[in-house]
Image (tube, rainbow, N blue to C red):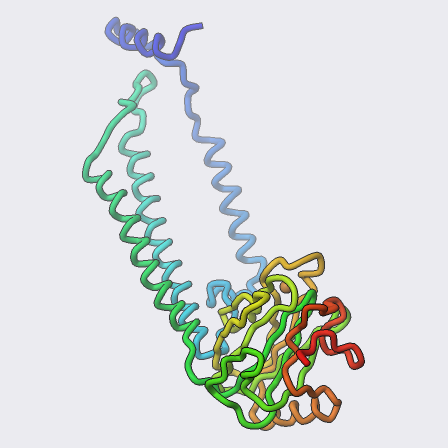
Length: 324
Ligand SMILES: [Cu+2]
């Protein structure tokens, strides 16, 4: 069997002799490719026609993002949208160059082997500088949006949130808030609290007043969790031993879903919670209802060293998680 190099040499020699013997490449027949294209087109058309429900249309319009229900959410969405635009522009340039090269440098006859190495200095300069510029622009806008999402200013309401394997505890302050409280023990924002706590069999609900800047003081009783609500378009880790602060301003009343975003153990997938954004009056009523139900505490339930995690922190006679 001859090596490829040999056959290339032979092909040159053969060509000189006027022979048609060359590199033995199977002849391209367009028929199967055309059939494949037709089948693919038909498939795509059927998929499109198979029905775009209203929900699908909304998904497409939102570029697969949830509706934004906070003041800060649109910043994340804009970053996402423009990242798509940048990716599409890059795609069009790359596909264009591929198409151009495929057509321009195609094999024009059976015994022709195009030059196998080429260089083009302007092109090489372009594909070195363009990605660097893209990274700089992406980095700039990512930092800009991150600054909005992590900005801490004086909150209207502070909610102490504890993640515990495998649910959440929400502590709401009662009465006047001390706005510059650090959230560390002995420096909580409120004099007393009401709470609700989920466990393995009950998904807790986080109730928030609309149009108020809410600060979540995030803590963990055991391992690293991550507090996130898709419709808020932001999330943050809850790390044992520290208080992470996240602020959002909900603007649209309604019910949303929240969850833990950090694989935190065998029942991580159970760490769901509901979010209800309500009017100030309904919020006040909710806190009063929690107080009536006896779910009150002087300090928020944040989980202690001996917390029994599976059952949640707020069991009536069994408040292992309370900070007393
Ligand atoms: Cu978790």
